[in-house]
Image 1 (cartoon, rainbow, N blue to C red):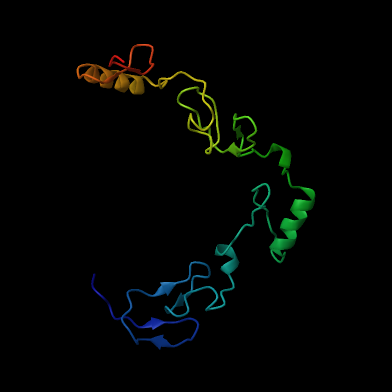
Image 2 (cartoon, one colour; image 1 turned 120 degrees about the vertical axis):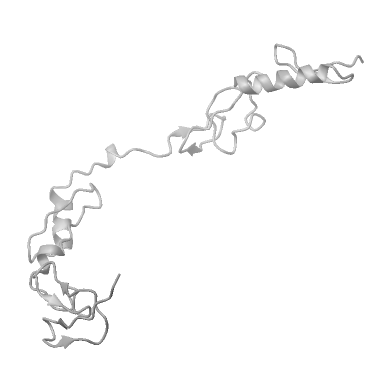
Length: 179
């Protein structure tokens, strides 16, 4: 991109600035006057029309509703008044995060997500999620078809070798060697 050397008349200082290469004069989008790069910000040239562009709407921290603020009002006071009178926040309607209670007797922990045991299908906390940690009474083979298929493949290859452990169709582990 070619760089043009322009004399930029700054509306703030009134002098023409030619100290460095400039691409184009900078026009304020609020008041429409032309400024140098040092005075283009609203605060730098004390823009009288900055309120048109520099608008921030406060949001209620409880109900997340935008609160309209009139010119000259202090946003904190307006939001405080909204919280005291018009706020529709109801703590009883707030969704609870930790709702999945551990089913191990005596444990009172709750988790954000369900942690299901693969064997019995019950919900437990992270500490009691493994079958040995909650004295699982479920079936001895995993409930997933992929896990059961893997055990069956392993048992067929193991049955071919002497002294191997086999898994029959009921899922109970047995030893093939005679005692």
